[in-house]
Image (tube, rainbow, N blue to C red; front, side, top):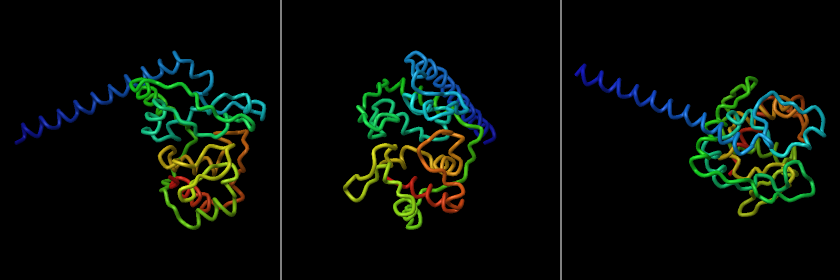
Length: 221
């Protein structure tokens, strides 16, 4: 019995270390793909945020990724990189140009490896808060009435999609973005975007209200 148990433990450890080695290999290969395809020309992968003025922000061609591991769900990144769909109605930081949806596609193996790499990019200032998605009336009231978030963000209303196009869509955000990142961003946005168009909610909303808003946003399908 002891021999069998020992064999099981050794086998499990071998699988664990083997899996870790595969992940590390994927991270290295993903970083190479990211560099070879010149993704860094549009996406910042090293923090902290560098923009100081609105001109700095407007000059960006794509969203920063130096906190991608805090922000995105891994499964979303794998799927999106292989088959990109517009997340914004307008081009990144444009008020006049529609998003053409022409982000380059990656082969599945490349998408998987780049995802492994991006998930290693985290901010030391990020603090997990244990936010759980919750479609509650209090959060809906904050989103729709008190803050009017749909002025910039698309949301689903029954079978219809309505709202603004200047910000990223909230349609499907539950599959895309981690709840704790939504809370972290709403409560301390300058860590991630020192220059931005969104309001700063700290001081306007209480911490419990920000948590309710984050829980509601992260529940949106």
